[in-house]
Amino acid sequence: MNIVVFGGTGLIGRAFCRYALMNNHVPIIVSRNPDRFDIPYKKISYTDAGKPVLQRMLSDEYAVVNLTGAGIANKRWSKQRKKVLERSRIEMLERIEVFLQQAPQEPEVFVQASAIGFYGDKGDVNVDEDSTQGNNYLSWLTEEWESAFKEMSLEDTRKVIIRTGIVLTKDGGVLPKMLTAYNAFVGGPLGVGNQFLSWIHIEDEVRAIMHLIEDSYARGAFNLTAPVPVTMKHFAQTLGAILDKSSFFRVPAFLLKLLFGQMAQETMLTGAKVLPKRLMEHEFEFIFTDVDLALRNLLLKKQ
Image (cartoon, rainbow, N blue to C red; front, side):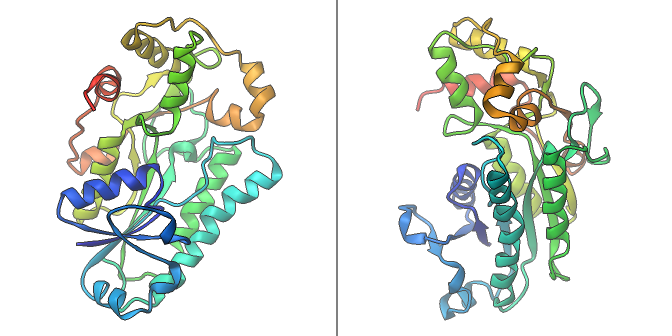
């Protein structure tokens, strides 16, 4: 199947395209500047939708995956940064809708990125897809994102929303940042460490996306998190044990708030114990359900 991927040059996008290619699918990456990237997939721009070669590729059954969006935890949330976060999500969906309107037919399935930030801070209560929305900025942003997706005029397309947790990979995200701290002998939990960290191994992340593409009964929202979330303290201790380094250096909450403000409060110091209820109901089988095994796979396997 041809799979049109928006955000295919990002962290999850690159891994997903590799996995799709290995499983006999054809990833087509849509980018504003396709010539910037040296990748072994077909690259097109947003203005190429009407070209004959792409029209032929989209004349049969195809899928769409949208993984675009500026990094939530990359910078402090100034007013300007919040506008970037919002535009890169809401306005990008408008561009994608215009792109798809030029295709000969609608996609069979559209998988739309979201995040477990939808649920806000839920403490140690079990959270699944039926749980209520949170009441902070990140909850509002993800709800707006999902609402914009639901309102897209794709009447014949099966729509899937993936609420992704903390993705564990050595190629980017939270893990390399934590490794830097441990290698400097200042590794440890953020804040008190009781907040839950709902994680997923990058391999399970891309496998889950493909599973939802191929499962014709999959619709609506799915949590993409491992079935056993852990506290920040547990995660830090596990990482320290694997690296054989101390994990007792606790980064004070006040310092994180001083450096990163609201972003620290909503992404580092609070969390939710998110469970992949619907994904497991749809018979997805995780490879990594234990955080210790997931980290060992990423950090100790031969490259």
